[in-house]
Amino acid sequence: MEFGFSPEQEKFKNEVREFFMNELPADNRMDHRHDMFLNEKQLAFGWRLQQKAGAKGYLAPGWSKEEGGLGLGDIEHGISGEESGYWNCTWPTQQGLRVCGPPLHVFGTPEQKKKFLPSIAQGKMVWYQTFTEPNAGSDEANMQLRAIQDGDYFVLNGQKTFITAQSPADYLYTLARTKDVLPKHRGLSLFLIDAHTKGISYRPLPTIGVFTIEIFFDDVRIHKDSLLGELNRGFYHAMETFAFERTGTIDAGRARRHFEELVQYCKDTKRNGKPLIQDPEVRKMLAEMAMEERIEWLCSWHGQWYLTQKEKLGAQPYNLYAIFKKTFLTKHAEEESRMLGMYGQLKKVSKYAPFDGRVEAAWQDARSFHPEGTMEILKNVVADRGLGLPRYSRPEGPGKPVTVKQG
Image (cartoon, rainbow, N blue to C red; front, side):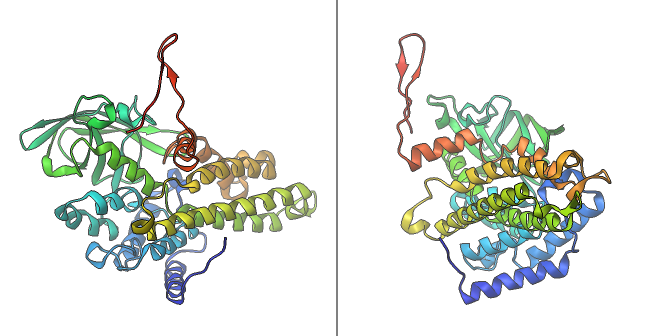
């Protein structure tokens, strides 16, 4: 599959690219694989750059001007995302832009849209997606954070864990249990919660590759206006959220830049007196990586194009981009480690680390690449919605098969 942009879209692409070329140092490494190594100066620079990009409408160009965007389309939105990824930018408000903002367009009230969307699009508000719990990861229906209605308020008690955190949050995009019912997924609701509300506390939870936190809710009172969408329909709203989260071009742009620099590194670096690029095994791995990087890029743009056809085609039933991204990230990290040999295991902080320590960082990232759903969940989605395969019964005790039904 091959396609091109319109003259207007090409002009916009060049405009965004020129912005990054003028604003960023040539050696910029403000990307997600190095978040744990950013110092205060780099974080401050990221915030300033985000504010500049937001003021120009480049963070969310597909959103309307009233919402802080440029009133363009989903293709232009994808162009801006790909360019920011290619230039190694991860915005502090990335979760708001990619995960929380899009569902707000679909389920939010006019008041909620007016309150939140401009601040997200202008890079002034940081959001956390707070779904995962100690006993509810892939099994979203098992959510145990309680939100009990008390007049015009909800009172929340419970815990969230493994929440990705780059900068202190302003708001929490939170899934909670509002009703005890079977099946369980019909008793969940989504809330937009001020992160500084009394009763909310945070605790660092460092993991391999990314920095996460735990969040505790102790008699947290929030107004009913914090509810997003319908009461007890939060599971379905969350599934729509995942569809948006698994669609985008920023990671594809980042992967393309990483591959280009890896090829240049192999041209410039010698082993046993010869450039790495002349090693047949290295050339073979690079050739395979080139094809796989292209597949990832095409899948990302297929998902972005699908958004432009949503009124005609409906929601995209499945997205191969998330699967290929995780598959290739893991595979490429392993292959790059073999290319660089033992030195490829050194972290960025070591002066002996080749390729700026990015191979080791990619390897770590691939060890804990759980956002957007595990590979097993993504494969189930493709099997169900893409291939139409039946859901098999699971045994409920000896001789008691029970068919797993949807809905």
